[in-house]
Length: 195
Image 1 (cartoon, helix red, strand yellow):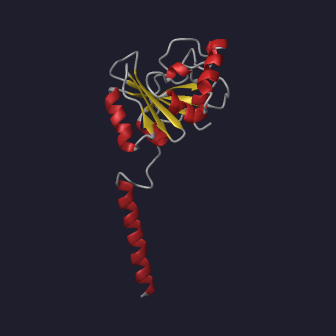
Image 2 (spheres, helix red, strand yellow; image 1 turned 90 degrees about the vertical axis):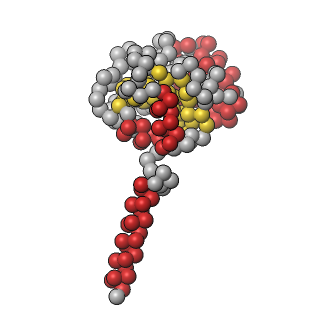
Image 3 (cartoon, one colour; image 1 turned 120 degrees about the vertical axis):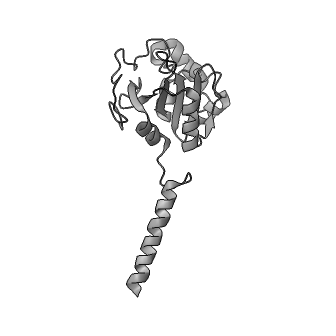
């Protein structure tokens, strides 16, 4: 009798777990970084100018416009903060991760998805990266009160150490002159992944 009760309890727990795994509010759902890495093709990486073990990862959503990718990310996990779509760009903040969507310069039907941890964003992005998208007060709350002024001074002294995002022009030191992965059909992983 005890075995049949235990068996019923185990089956019930397994069915409950399976049901949770299929719902939008599952406690077992992948985080946004895992979702992006398994859904979209890893396109390139950008090394941090401050810490060579840190990377921003660039993914490509082929034949998918920015609005569709934006909806997909929000459906998977609601961001803590997000900008409006403006000039082909949108920024999301999830916990300690910044996700930036931009229309591909090479093919307007593709969307580039840049994933950067908070440390990478703080130490590499220039203040202009956020202007027009996220409030300065929000960025100050995340990076510290004097980040804008301090980072602006650093960018004026060493503009090549100030990253403007993947599609930006300029000679940022961490941006590969020859992309590390471009055109790869691999999904997720790749150079710098998990470092």
